[in-house]
Length: 150
Ligand SMILES: [Zn+2]
Image (tube, rainbow, N blue to C red; front, side, top):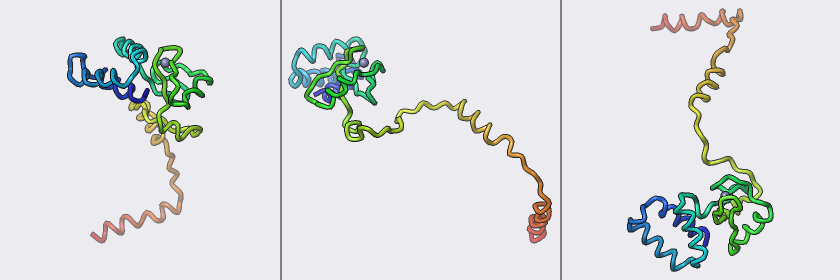
């Protein structure tokens, strides 16, 4: 049910309330979601915050507050409704998170820092001290031989 709210929330937040997409989604929710739950959800969405938020590694993805371990346990039962104590969003554990429960995954959303990356690359490529060894000098006859072949 929360998953349904979550996917609906994207539509509701994307389209203004006058848009047919918004109204259609709303009408669908009214049929499927108990009115008390829907009212709370819609209040949050109207405020511009998330009415339903996936929990990623025990953290509410809406307000980034840590979920108490008791609530995390309840989240494993999809029929239980768990509200974020901090922002009030309905919490749910995404399916892929449920499957890969104890494994720590690399974060999908990575912030690119082009400046920092360029600096790091510059550090790496700047001083590779080349020491001219005698045998290197000896084999340097090779390039000139190629030149002669041309
Ligand atoms: Zn929250």
